[in-house]
Image (cartoon, rainbow, N blue to C red; front, side, top):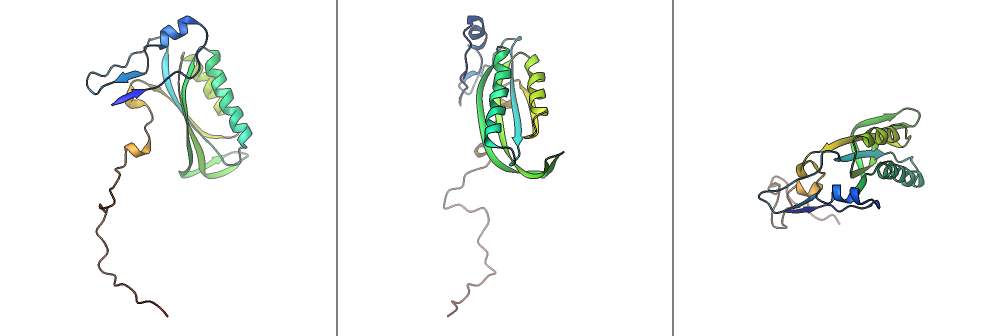
Length: 174
């Protein structure tokens, strides 16, 4: 198992790099090491945008969230666009409408704990954001993993269920 996340934006200060250089580097299955300094924490923010939110505004929202993190000496490690997905229940956004599907994003970042409040304020008052959640990452198991890691991939010769035997093939209609 190899897992590594690189720093996307590096400020010019040397102290910042010395604080982050040891973080988010893991290799090997046994004896994994997850180190980070107590002054810096790592977070994962998940948020969803509705389909009426224009693409330009989506781009500006992502820029605003990354600016809020970078201004406080934080770093964005990755932004994943998970695409359009259906919600389990209808989501009501007052003044906008009711939504059954939305576009999901996951942003992994590191910075001081004060940034969480500012980031949540940015997402809370945006008209395009339906839901958002920021979770503190304590170890590598807390990081978002792709869906393919949870579902087994079947070979072409394998079947989930046996073929239906109670149906007889229909004759061709002329």
